[in-house]
Length: 92
Image (cartoon, rainbow, N blue to C red; front, side):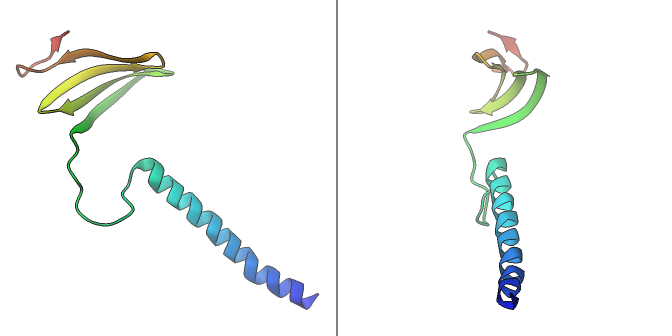
């Protein structure tokens, strides 16, 4: 009986620590945080801002090749609404 209690006292914190560590790692991976340290690599596309409109739909502004593009994102797909090729937004 003593051996069982000792095993329980050793394994229970170990299993709890593994569960907490896996949840912590999953959260970091889901958020897109790099697991290794270092400089952030430049991306060709950057998300500038998002405005939720309702369940399953939102407006987003993305920056690509120096242009900001307004897009509508829904469950049916993505639609380009406008861009700022001349400095202010122009509808497509």
